Amino acid sequence: MEYLVDAKKMKQCDQAAIEELGIPSMVLMERAALAVTEEILKARPQPAPVLVVCGSGNNGGDGFAIARLLAEQKITVEVLFAGKDASMTEECRRQKTICENCNIKIVRNFPEKEYTTIVDALLGIGLSRDVKGAYAELIGKLNASAAYKVAVDIPSGIRSDTGNVSSVAVRADMTVTFAARKLGQVLYPAADFCGKVVCRSVGIPVRKEDAAAFLPGPEDLCRLPGRLPWSNKGTCGKVLLIAGAEGMSGAACLCAEAAYRMGSGLVRVLTPECNRVVLQTRLPEAIVTAYRSAEDAKEKLTCAMEWADVIGIGPGLGVEEHAGVLLGTVLEAWFGPLVIDADGLNLLAAHAEWQVLLAKRAMPAVVTPHIGEMARLLQKTSQQVLNERIDCCRNYAKSQHLICVEKDARTVISDGEAIYINTSGNDGMATGGSGDVLTGMICGLLAQGMELLDAAVFGAYLHGLAGDEARRKLGGYAMLAGDLIRQIGTVLRRF
Image (cartoon, rainbow, N blue to C red):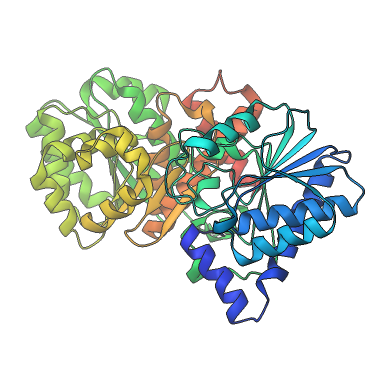
């Protein structure tokens, strides 16, 4: 599990290295500068001429040190100092003096010449306000250059804690960051400005307790539930899916097949009678329990709940009377693992009393809202949720006593305390039914005994890996949700 940090945590780690380990700040700066210099020379063996753009903070100090190290390699380099002398940190001032002593050219205005490489050491990770005025104008000039751009720690203009971007930000080809990646380097839209992100160790330890968020990787998949040689369909778990409405049988099919492909022993689908033939034709392995009315639905649900190990509700369900009856019954009478998606969330947003029931469950439910559904649950706009995606996810999970899987290009998952960010997946998954597949996968993991939070985190991660495999085979434009299901086995076999 990779540890991601925010600006505050990174500064604390930096300070701990100085005060607790006794590594001088200038030594850390030299290590950082050497790391960036090495990465520049790897990416651009002939980087000259180079322009290093420095601000007044320690990020600027890194930049001055980088300029000196490049000059020592006989590489033509100039420094543009865009900061203010009065605002310089002590380390930045000392590095600037060293450059002056080494006769490195330092200018105050953007030179009207062509550069092969530009190093952005202007603002760093501490940015907390919009970039305006002279800095905004300078960043515009940097972006207009055809030079290869390398950001030191983070591109200037990016909010390292949120992934939001100022009105203007440097578009880097490569970002060299230190000790741990920052939240803003994996969250969109900021991730799109970072280019290739290289994380280098410079002697600053980052511990689990320092992490602002966790990022799952292939090394964590050993936590997936194993299968015993004497397993049978009963021991592999029974999933009840309450899904589908008239014209929405596909959602039920996708969700059910994904639960099976994830390893569930049995999957039962509770759905309107009009979906029976489609389900039994498309997925003969599924058990279909069909209802004809709201009253019939409640009666059959009561029986099905006695059979199930885990319930998933919402994909293609609709928001009509029968859907409300089903969700209300589940919230009142089901106390086991529960995943709520799609129309289940829309019904929750419209009925405050059901959110109260949800929050009172002894076993937390798993909810899987996309940004629009999250906005409806919180009574915010989608843009507000995007701007505050981590806080929205964590706060909703905490207030409602649940696991929230906030789906987006970077899915954020929280139990109200810890934050997990999923970076697997791609834009080819932006197609109808992808969310139904995720719900089925999470249900499949829960049915096999996986813990709630782990099932949410690794369900999202495997879902993205399946999407990446589908894109490799089909390309992003041609992908369908069913293609994700077909790659689940490939991904599980590989890892």
